Length: 202
Image (cartoon, rainbow, N blue to C red; front, top):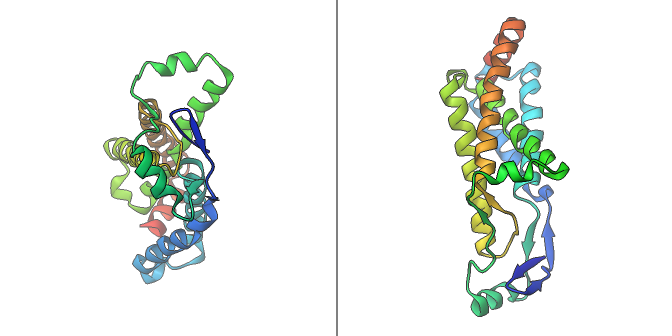
């Protein structure tokens, strides 16, 4: 449901993450094409399948559902109210401490911290040259910023009601730092497995 001022508008459809499967499969195809011949082995699926599943879940958690208005309803709404009347922006970085005192707030914080941890880990295996602290921070920050900006644009045009939250940027970036140290520990404990996965992913 979309809220503009004191009025609510019900979309005709809510697109689910399932519609993104063709895009995800296309990404997988690109990955396979760019792999060297010796890497197109079963062991590479150890990375590829979980990565595609993660992307699917990530889209479902951050972008979908997408509101769809049919029969010219959305143009009529924009014509009458303009764009950007649905204002969901939170720019106070201190708000995190306020919400952390509630159960829902705590769960939200934990969820945002771990949200992009797998992304940093997968990218570090696919591109071993990015397996460093600076890259981990950049991947998490810019990945989070991309998601937040997409959500903001979707809000402006009334196809979503998600919040652009600066706290999400902070927590997602913290998750990137945690992912870097997880990789360091994993590499130290299981160096052979780490090297195999890096070779197959690269």
